[in-house]
Amino acid sequence: MAEFISSKTKSVVAQRAGHICEYCRTPSAFSSSKFSVEHIIPRVIGGSDSVDNLAYACQGCNNIKFTKTEGLDTESNTMAPLFHPRNHQWADHFCWDNSLLRIVGLTPIGRATIDALKLNRAEVCNLRAVLFLIGEHPPKN
Image 1 (cartoon, rainbow, N blue to C red):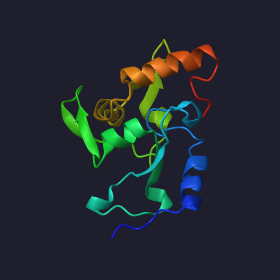
Image 2 (image 1 turned 120 degrees about the vertical axis):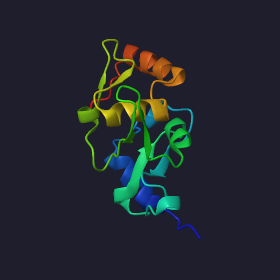
Image 3 (image 1 turned 90 degrees about the vertical axis):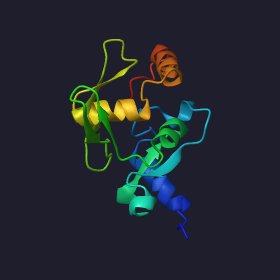
Image 4 (image 1 turned 180 degrees about the horizontal axis):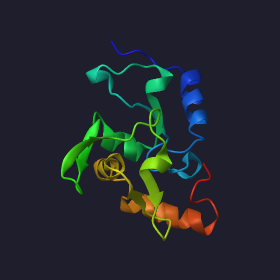
């Protein structure tokens, strides 16, 4: 039986992430859906409920990621691990394009994660555009 993740643990994970999706960088304060605490390494392949294996994710990223741990880097046409928020630094693998609305992959990990999690899906890019207009995008951290 799956273990229950406590409210305290969920709060720790959210605070550590600055209340921003650790994948697409959407702030939870502007989301129409509640964010999730997701397992970076899914339970079904041996991932634990340790805070080191938990990430704060919007519903879109969480639902799309599901049990994925790798994706195709279309530039090299090879499989690459997905971004791991505890082991990788976001800025090492991603940056914003000139419009600041789309995430660009800098590495195989970044490119594979963008494609696998659809980090530039239309709804997220539209939200980024509105948040940019009110000075809430890109996120500070």
